[in-house]
Length: 316
Figure (cartoon, helix red, strand yellow):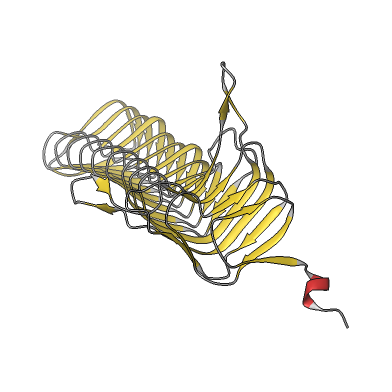
């Protein structure tokens, strides 16, 4: 019979700060707390870190350090199954302050005089909850962080970005000072931001909801089955939008630069839906322009709004 250590050799972590210097599998045996600085520092590639359902926290009176920090150019990192707790709060007007960590999960970049280098690659963060950090919750960078993924994570009350990664799935970030969810491909996510985007996807957003107080609710190159709401800016913005809804109190409800297919846009004081080519869409405003398009096929305006369309098909 083989022992557990023979089947899966793992190194326990029972106190912090702790530095991981060699590849391998590591796991927490208890809650960890630091009075200042980083709690766990990863300095090697090929590391699996299992938080085991425990919490990493900081009692620093002024937020500093990172709960889980890894150095530049690392590969093959997996972090999962636990909690990161800080004491930063939002005073209700978008000002974040308090004790604990600056970052939940973060990395180091170097600048060689021309560009930043040392992006992480093949990093996976899953089933992690982060609360109360002064800056970002989980940040793996986006376009240059090759093949990295965040999934099934939650972030709440951070002064910077909630979750940043190339691929983000089935995750939630609320009460974020800047952008709540930011990635290349984002699916099944919800983001709520104070100052930036609720959800931002440089490539595709699918089945997502984004809300922002002063920025865009949801923005993506391609948006599919998404909803966006903003108090002050576009509710939803995309190059192409399919099956999407956008709502805004003070700007365009849904803005699709090229095509809106089966979409709905609503605005309280601007255009409901604005696009080049609209097909089978509907738009709502109390008064004014509901639908603004060059080409529209099978579209309708709701309530008192009117359509401003250059070429109409299958519609009044």
